[in-house]
Amino acid sequence: MKKNYTYRNYLVLRFILIAMVSFLFQGCQSLADVPTFSNNNTINVVVEIPAGTNTKVEYNKELKKLKVDQQDGKDRIIEYLPYPGNYGFIPSTYSSSETGGDGDPLDALVISSKLLSGSVVETTPIGVLKLMDNGEKDYKVICIPSEKKLQTVSANTFIEFSEKYPDALKIIELWFSNYDTTDTVTIEGWGDEKEALAEIKKAVQQ
Image (cartoon, rainbow, N blue to C red; front, side, top):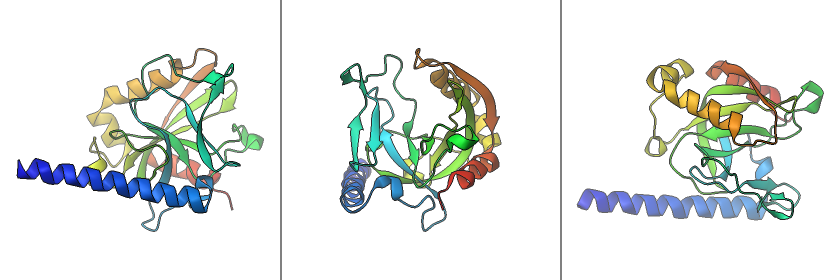
């Protein structure tokens, strides 16, 4: 009982800390301008959509706030299975349209339990799903939280992840291929952690 109570205290404190950090980031600067690399040389990810939810939330750089995406004047709710991870973007990156990108920050999927929308999480990229969306490059970097207590899978490389959780790759691929029936999605394959890091470094805004 004491162990469970201590763990619950930890979760509450972590939630409060993440909320405070998110408030400070949003109050002082744009989340889009948070450094790509953390002080620990890991990759920062801004969470827009918590795992297990269906509401399409996006960060508005001009307003410096998270907003529910609108479709036909209504909140956009994904009419499919919930997001299989915490979805967001890698700050201070840009997928240039000149190189076939969609003009947005690089997308990221953090594999863990539900994280707070607006939180900035230190992660380790372990792979990249190479996806084309309506003819535009829309790669998804797959990340694992750097903090052990946030991890729900144990893997540090793409090979390790694919060998331990081969069906997880299929789930992620199928989800992104089918969640939006209005888009034409083509899967070009997977890249390992080295390719993921190379994509991130290419997209970092100088």
